[in-house]
Image 1 (tube, rainbow, N blue to C red):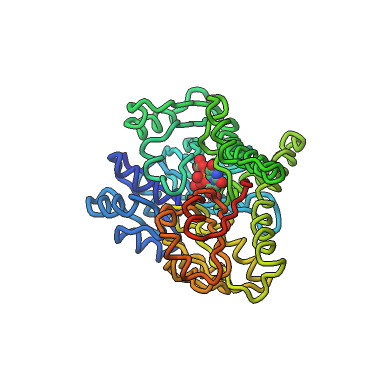
Image 2: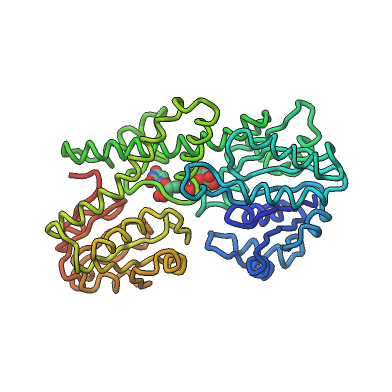
Length: 439
Ligand code: UGA
């Protein structure tokens, strides 16, 4: 099929490349011409496993092309996915839908024939009718343009795999007999054939699917991190507790890793945007628990800063601290709302000299947190440090030899914010080890 993907960030660029991999003829649109240029050369403007390979393969095969021109995108085909960002509005909990409505307004006047506009961006429930209204008013094809809601559940770091083999497909339509359904079923035919559960529903349910999935995931993480707080005061071990709970199939261990909590461009802003929308709808009471989920999450960051101060005699002023990790999670270079960088920045503001290392995210971290020191070598980061903080669990940190590292540190003390270092091995190598949620 000939289709377009509007917005080529983490979601859109991945979707475009994966649609080409499924055999479609794809044009990706982004208004950032540098990004378009890079994507056309077969490279992603961010790090995502397997994505560069797919981009290179399909820009070369001719099935994938990027443009900054709405005219070109609109003329390319009659299925248009929209995957632009919907960030948190500055100073508020609500979503900023400026990019989304902007994209729809620019696309609409160029739609001269029947078309399906399938929206993947995460939005407050009730956005679909507003998009349909704009399209019907401003598209020459009028009501022949159908809006479909097709939420995306991919995770950064496994985005390609999640897109090619999703755990479910959700299609939301306004009418029961929708032409758009046939179009989407054709587009995802291979995915559906592969046995992917496919749920066809109304707009509101499809919109809510994403908000509620992310809220559940955030709640699960904050639940185990609340248990970590209790463990810290009672001498219990939250990692063992999570294992024990996880054996109950109704609870499940996955998505319940205790630690420094959730960050990134999705979970934090989605629970806030969801609360804001529930307030507008008069259902605010239903979601007040999400305020607590957010608060527990933020307390984890404060707890690490508190532990660092405690470990350094109450004052971090002038002390050299090493931080392992800048990305909001391993296997990405995304630093949006990164717990690791929040902690590093707080310690810097308290007067510490903080050196941050990360295998992939240093360029992004330098832009958002220019006052911190950086090195790409985790061993060099620890040179003369009185404290090491392990804040993003990149697997390679588990392979650093703690014995060798101890000779570099001014004082071999580590706080493990993710609970993935082998504490016994580090203690044997002479380190004082503290961890969140462990005695
Ligand atoms: C999240 C959802 O998992 C995706 O399903 C969704 O599509 C995406 O948001 C989105 O809205 O676009 P993502 O933000 O890429 O995906 O990352 P996750 O793997 O969910 O991790 C989010 C944060 O939670 C990270 O900071 C991670 O370190 C933390 N986390 C995750 C934990 O602290 N414990 C866990 O058990 C899992």
